[in-house]
Length: 386
Ligand SMILES: [Zn+2]
Ligand SMILES: [Zn+2]
Image: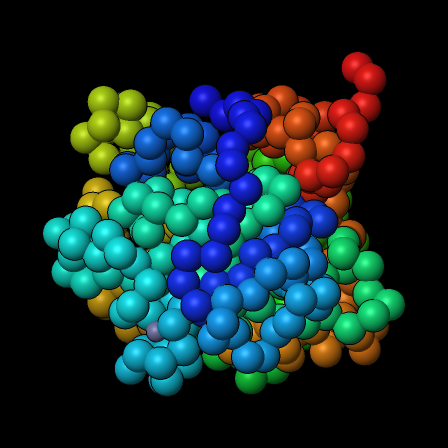
């Protein structure tokens, strides 16, 4: 359950912290995995939110780059900037920011970087669906935003734009490819636009909601409503002259919807908690991809995936690429693309609400009511009179 509660304002705990007064925050598709209870190690009272930006109001004694008064975006991953992984630009694999590393080590062998507002297994840091947040390793994460760019244009540099971009970059496009993208939610929308930026000739966008497919079409994608085709794999073969898409992107992840026997099987396993994930889309992406192609996975998965066609991946010689976004590789270059006018990320916003309205907004977003694609929250606004 998500609710609004008064909590003490955060304070500097470490000399490399900054406190940010949040001016805009958003609800992410991956917050819905928390909302639906599929991410373990959440506790009552945890503050959600990992897409936020604002003004620096206080800095610790060892913060050098950013200063009080700066307007910044804060990436959703927390990285130290000094470990082997950070030095090798593998920011989301940072070794030093998760104080609860042991929880991850048990499940995954090693821990990944901590995330804001995303379970105790991933650090237990308070998130940014709030008025203030403490930002650890502030110099490594925060990116200063120049004057003249409004919040809504740069807010999504905190997650979904870089995440969509990395998903497309992982397809290793040379120009002229056909890219199929499952899921036209916020990340899918940025993946579509990034695939075109990186040279895809055709993008085939797959979803079942009309408003999302419409937004995909506006970016130049061909669209397939999977509920309206008999066999999606056959359809994808048909529209690619029998060869299959060069790259297939799973922008859905662990809570895939679908029809048919496998979908029912996934639902029932997840319901009895015998599995975290419903990997329906990933199965389809592997099955549909052309031989020697790339399957890129920005969608979030948590546990052991069942009935994955590994034999198909092997025998077709597929490349599988995935993972949390290495944010710091992308924030500056993508800010430049926004400044150059190549993209205005605010296109994806369908709902602008006050933070106090977040509990209802979670439900609207989860249930795809009211043509909701992306919710942005203002932590300082009065809720609109209902
Ligand atoms: Zn997110
Ligand atoms: Zn690090």
